Length: 112
Image (tube, rainbow, N blue to C red):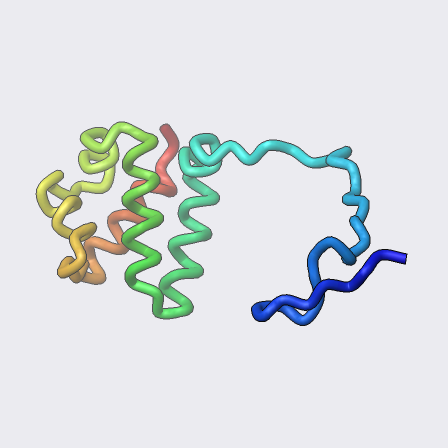
């Protein structure tokens, strides 16, 4: 039987703890963030969830990540928002108007 060593930080030594077998990784898939963030439907759903929960910072983060994956100029043109305004929305002090939010959703709904 192993001797139980007591340290000042822990009640028992980690040497006494039995190792645990982890499940195999069978069935797991690698998450592809670029693929997810380029999906207009997924981004629109995530943005809507942020609006429903009142998470304006989350809205900005998701929109910013989406714009990093796609062509920003094309998105701004599709949304009918000047690029400068679009980037101003993403700043910490940015406070998008309802009109600009609706234009973002409209651009996400338009076909490529």
